[in-house]
Length: 511
Image (cartoon, rainbow, N blue to C red):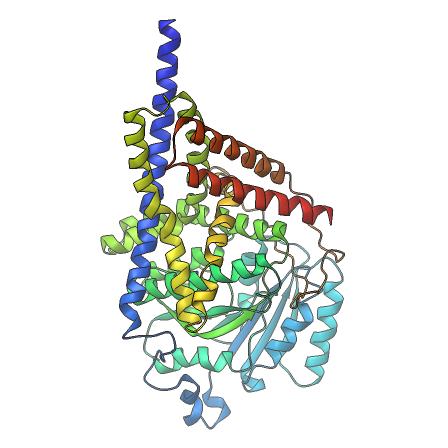
């Protein structure tokens, strides 16, 4: 009997340590969200979102360059794989960029294995016949995936500046001149890349796309801007940016050993003294995933790639001469998806701890209140960041949009199972198995995507998510029975989030 009690005490101790460590780590990420938001608030008065990033209008930088040969030659690379619904749209938007044709090289880097090949060959031939400098580059293999395609095309690049667009983007005609203005305004600077903000073509399509747009707005308007303005390391977001070719070469080129080749190259360049310029006033609209399975697939790839980069780069970051705050911010940035396994640990360990605890005891009540005070800032740090992003972008509408942030928190909690698997694969796995996010050219409510190609196989993780929903409902019952009233709201959030994500995944798979 004594031996059994000892085993129970050991189990309780282990679960308590896991729960406490997860809560404290969760708190650190929450505090960092508060910190970045506070930095954005402090900077708003002297550098609001609409303020120009240079002393003169970037579009007027070109006014003195009357002769075409004075303009720098720019190469636009379009890495594409099986995108039959949006491939033509991308090429047409890039060819409509307001830039002299003889100074603009367009490279269509096509790894497709379906009819996207024929679509791209046709549109490239059309624009080539009209006098555009456009090349079709097709690989018979996908070695290195996107990074491999970009690196393989480097010998064919004729310009010193390389703009990159993924298939879901539709840049405006003035995008290139505005972004190039940063390079031309600082000809002696060590600018490696100019990153612009992502806009949204279909934010109003559904609740899912609305929540994704709020998430991305918070990332770009608060996180990226705060990192840039405070001198922290930040990243090229993989698309809608312009690289300086010598910076790519000096930093070792594109590597295919992670799923986040954009973060990898960005960090290597900055650690070699190059700078990334982020300008949120220049916007490139893109299509958001409309299927929950596609969104989870995208998040899985970002989470796995981020953790691969953390494993690859954090040692170099901490050995660099960066100030300690810069190193800390880089650590939080690269490991940000660790929030998801922390969420999972918290919910999984809380139930047995509550089950084994004495109901309504004073000691348990004190511990629970301490846990609650830890979880409050950890939980509400990110929502404040997202609300700030909405306030900056929509000063007259942000109060109406703010309630959606709570649903975004639920979405983030609901995908914690999927992203936990991604984080573990990034830390423990080898290689980089790239699975792209399909696009369907969906822009308006009522547009149909369910019967188009690129169906994602049913996600077995939805069953686990619904199981976690039931598990959390059991946690709610325990909270009521044993008096864990501080913990109850958190368990309710878990139950709703897992139910929403798992249920939507199954419903869309059936439809």
